[in-house]
Figure 1 (cartoon, helix red, strand yellow):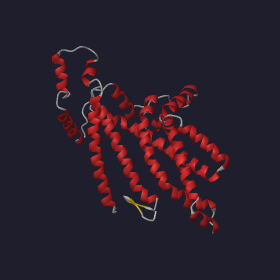
Figure 2 (cartoon, one colour):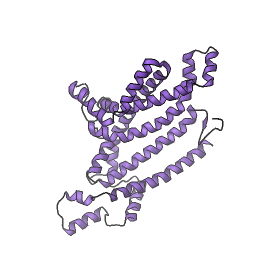
Figure 3 (cartoon, helix red, strand yellow):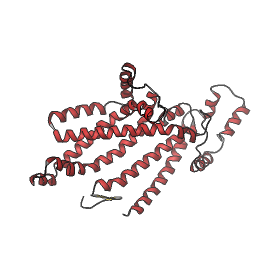
Length: 319
């Protein structure tokens, strides 16, 4: 399948999926108890005229499909409405908070990739006691939720030792990196264990391949065989896991950002959900869904580059 044909098909699939997700995101909030009007009134009683004015301002009395189509038309134009909690445009909230979340996810992804790949490589190649120690440590990592890791890291390195800030996102790139160091490790810990195990399993499977035995019998250095044949043949599996890892990072930011008061879109989503800020919840949820799909598209495009058995949109018959 040609690149343009594959890309066009995937973009069409993404558009249809995003349309369906927008309907679910918009409609799900109206099934929850409470309403934006009750939050705006803060529990106070209101006259019928005041309640009618609130409903008119936020179009709460319009039929569901009318509200959805109006909202969808605004979203297509980049207008996500006005936040009920912050009394400002949701687009501005996203623009202010998205950089902190993207930097946090990027830093955590780097930690996961470096440490996870290294541990998986060492465990598969060394074996013995080293492999057992790595299996134990990755088991502990996988069994440690992100919010627990956040509390432990914050208590030790921020409160007790004072090496890192206990919260906030910082100002300027270097200051943000310093502030987000602990949150990125807390976010990465669980996924380090997962990637290390995936890498180890994929490399052990590749080590049993006939081509590896042939290469070693011909006198090719073991280090070269591992690098060019074993690890390279494992990258397809690792890349597939990488797509899941990035998606998980986006979800887990909600817990970590709240623990460290990062002020990104994860914490924004939590606060907006608590206060029934419908426009903000809808915008952040739709943004996360869109990021999921972009990550999956990138993985699909990169897969043929790291696994020669895979072509765009299909796997070769001899794989």
